[in-house]
Image 1 (cartoon, helix red, strand yellow):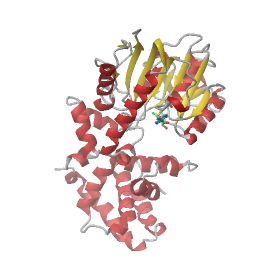
Image 2 (cartoon, helix red, strand yellow):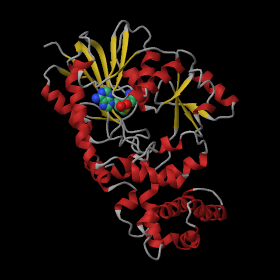
Image 3 (cartoon, protein in one colour):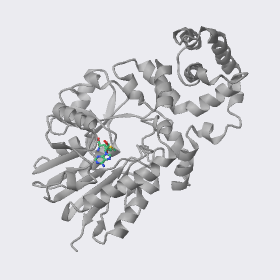
Image 4 (cartoon, protein in one colour):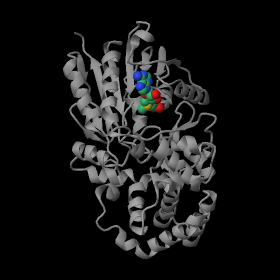
Amino acid sequence: MAVHTLLSMLEQGRSMDKTLKGLPSPLLRELVYGVARWYWRLKAYADQLLQKPLRAKDSDVMMLILVGLYQLAHLRVPVYASINETVSACEHLGKGWAKGLVNAVLRSYLRRKDELDVDLPDVAKYCHPSWIIERVSDSWPAHWREILSANNERPPMVLRVNRQRIDRSSYLQKLCQKNMSAVIDPLSGDGVLVDKPVDVNELPGFSDGLVSVQDTVAQWAADVLPAQPGNRVLDACAAPGGKLTHILEAHQSLAEVIAIDISQKRVDLIRDNLARLGLAAKLLVADAADPSTWWDGALFDCIVVDAPCTGTGVIRRRPEIKHLRHPEDLGKLVEQQAALLDHLWQTLISHGYLLYITCSILKEENEAQIERFSAANSDVKICELDLPTGTKGRYGLQTLPGVHKVDGFYYSLMQKKVA
Ligand SMILES: C[S@@+](CC[C@H](N)C(=O)[O-])C[C@H]1O[C@@H](n2cnc3c(N)ncnc32)[C@H](O)[C@@H]1O
């Protein structure tokens, strides 16, 4: 199953979570995420250990070798179990002939592991594709190694308690009663850091809406947004509704909240989240960058643009980004972000606020994007952000994995000046 999930991600671009849906094995998930994370390093080991390259049609055998190597290099599964299970999986792939080969490669790894890391190319050393290494080192020349290394770590599980229903200390007690160790997140108002990630359905009160899963920095949006009672608020790229639901939990007397997403399937996810948390918003499936198709002409007091982006700030959570994103995506995403900003600005009231967010760490999507936007619009005023960690730029604030010990997000808050 791990081989199948990884191959369908690498060869057909299929999301690993979609393939894994309904398969609750933690070991399976660990294998799949681990190989996606360490792919280039494991592949470099396999290439050194194989006496001759495998044929293209045996990519499943290669993937099985990587799954075996991952267990030996990163997990505490006993060596004999890792090797036996991996070798016997050859039969399940219909490649019984490969058993001797897989066995030999894995045993050879155990003998030669100390020599395999010498002279690795950067792609294998840092375990990222070369275009991401280049872009991150261009954006962050002093920090790129730290960032790439943090991207290869397992992320913490962060919860957000529903402040309308429970406070953090009471929720910690509920976790403690279920023998789950957790502490209050010092960098967010509603966050709880859980020691050992668990399936959401094991979290006390999850289905009753006591809690959601959301990274620390993503939890800042609701508090940064200067929404006032009676305001009309737009969340322009809302699915699956993480920030939207937090805004609704945090700001209770808003006049109207409209949430848009371009994808019908993803709007269904917002609907599920709203129902679980007992919250309400007006949902629209639309292209937010084309207000002529959805806007009624009434101006918004606050707009959140949590824009589509490369996701380069959340690679530790979604290692498949390293494989599924391509260099040509960057230019297209920068254009989409610009179109969203340019068109949504027209729907904002004078003195209103637009909060621009990405989970990218690339300057093109962040500081350079807002620099362009504010140069093109004389009525943009950049607001000061007072947040617990991050690197302040001229236009916004950036967090960096490894440097700030949280996911990589960019926040820029802009106010519309009166002309
Ligand atoms: C970073 S995600 C949003 C995450 C969400 N705000 C949350 O906190 O859960 C970006 C979303 O933008 C949507 N999107 C992309 N282009 C869009 C457009 N032109 N109009 C509306 N939504 C768009 C995508 O479908 C995706 O769901």
